[in-house]
Image (tube, rainbow, N blue to C red):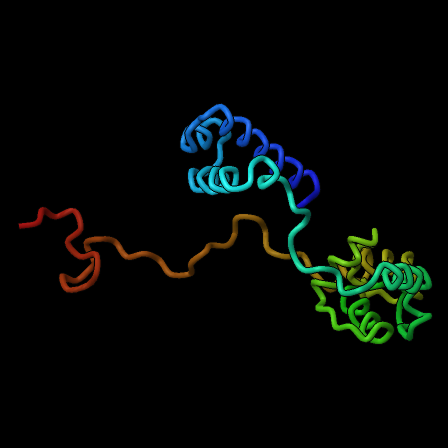
Length: 190
């Protein structure tokens, strides 16, 4: 959940606490705040047991980061060095899989690809998918080939509207035999 979402959720819980203090029933709180009745009753129970502070946010949920703040700084520095500095010389693109591998090599901590993606976002990086392009690609030669050679290879094609979705003709209703599907359509049933 985003920080804005957490703030919004806490704001709704604090509004619920105010309404409970005014002795408003949980079902009415649910209607007014547009939350489920189940949530309103749950919050009411928490409020009764611990007051307003029981409804306060406890911070982001989920598992803790397995890298210390110092390790996160080191990781950011490694990412700034680029993939070639860490053995990926094919291209200069950090993918989530490469970052997960780098974390394993440098910090001896196992991260999944999705976990590495979330960690990269936390550090302000975005994972990239490498483009399959030749570094020495000559765009002018490619454009010339598309305009001259590809036009010859492709051919003129079929004129629009000359094709049909089906090559078979549908038979007329009168040509159907009595035991085939669709036979007798339109005839009154007895």
